[in-house]
Image: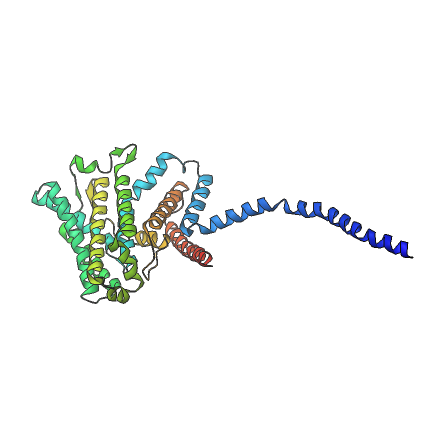
Length: 354
C-alpha cells in the first residue's frame, strides 16, 4: 500500500506536466491570428478617425470611377476644379461667416452687382478696366460692410439682414443695365480663366491660394483663432477682451470681397457680365460649407473640410452630367448628400469623442 501510494503520488506531478505540455501548443496556435486581427482593428480605427466628408468624397469618387470611364481623367479633374472655382471662393467667405455664428445669403447677388458695376463703368463710363475692377471689388466689400453693420450695430438677425441686402443687390444688378448683359472685356482679363500655370488653370491656382491664406489665418493668427471663440460664445469672447463687433464686421467685409472676386472669375470665364449671374449659387455655397462639417450655430469648421465639401459638390454635379442624370433630379441628389454628410460627420465626431 505504501509503495503504491508513493508511486501514485510521484506520478501526479509528471501527469500534470504532461497535460501542460500538451496544452501549450494549442494555446500558441490559438494566438497566431492576433497580428491580422490587430491590423484590421488599426485599419478600422484609422477609418473612424477620418472626417466624415472625406469618407464621403472617397466613396463618391470610387463609385463614379466605376460607373463612368471618363470621370477619373486629368482633363475631367481639371474641369471639376475650374468649373467650381467661383463657388469655392464664395464658400471661403461663407464659411468664415458661419464660423462666427452668422450667415450670408447675399453672396450670389453680391457677385452679380459687383460684376455689373465693373462692366457698366468700363463700357458706359469709359474708365480704365483696372480701375473698374477695383470699383467692383469695393462694391462687393461695401455690401459685406452693410451686412456687418446691420447685424451688429443694427442688431438685426444675420438671416434677415443678408436677406434684405440680397434682394437689394439683385435688384440693383438688374437696374444698372435694365437686365441686359454686357459683353467684350480686355484680353488680359479673359486670360484669368484661360491661362495655365504648370498645366493647372490660373483660376484654380487663385482659388487654392485663397483657401490656403484663409486656412493659415484661422490656424496661426490670433484674430483667426478669435473667430472660433466668437462662434462658440460671443459674450464670453467679449468679456475676454475681444472686439467682437469689429471682428464680425471684418468677416462680413471679407465675405463680400470674396464674392466680388468670384464675380471677376465668372466675368472672365464668360466674357460677359450677366445681371443674374451667381444668384442660383446660394444653395450650392451653403451646401459646400455644411457638407464640409461646419456647424450653423458657429464655432466649428475649417478650410480643409470646406474644400472637401466643394469637391463633393463638384464631383457630384460632374458625375451626374457624365451619367446623363436629369438636371431636375440633380438638386435632389445634392439635398440627399447634405443630409448624409451631416449625419456621417456627426457619427464620426461621436466615435472620436467616445
